[in-house]
Length: 304
View 1 (tube, rainbow, N blue to C red):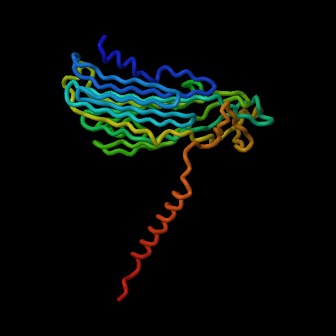
View 2 (view 1 turned 90 degrees about the vertical axis):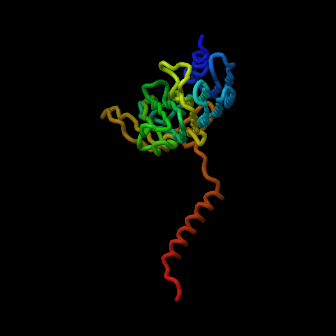
View 3 (view 1 turned 60 degrees about the vertical axis):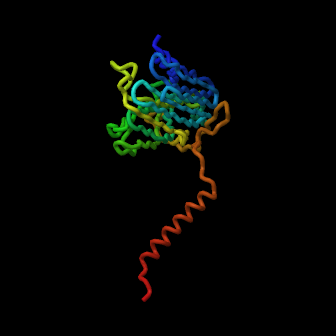
């Protein structure tokens, strides 16, 4: 078997996540390959909450890191390879799931539309023949109620590289930055549990390997970094509408009427994004005051 085909099998990380009442998984792989006669360097790892892999040799190298907890995913993948057969390849993947129940006295058993979201931030930074990709899934139980995105970037990308235009900042030939909140609206039965799932996968490699050049003999030197370590956060429940059996319409309801419970006791109603420390908020305020003072000072005339 061609070793590269074997590696593809080892690094198809996003294909085997089985959701349970509450679960997390982190997986990584890194490889540094050369000619078919060169010894391969491969490192594959996995863990419930974190994973790390690194490989170097044959004029190539790769690193990958993943960490996950319920509602938070942080990933990093980077690789480089010299021109020709030197190939660095990295994967980082993480996923979580939990069963959630939304209840309200007098409404349990009724249908409701629930809007919820996650915040996703990161970048892809390729150089030369480097290539990076991001695969993102966020949904409830299946692809029916989900957001599914696959985004890529090359060193001379076709802007915006597959990202939704509203959430991307990029310059052709430079890094592609991504920041956005992804929301879905799903129909649930109040008082009954449903399974929330999020999965994020990063991959970096050289772009010219494949087609008629499976050994990458003619590929250019390149590197790529995909950094989503700052990161993917659960963003909370933003709206609930309850089905009116008389009109057949979904009527917006006050969020305070509902309780959201899970086996772990996490408060899925709220965002899991970190709140700035009071000292950081003070510094931000101070910075604003200083900027205002400078503007005020610059507008005054100098004394005679």
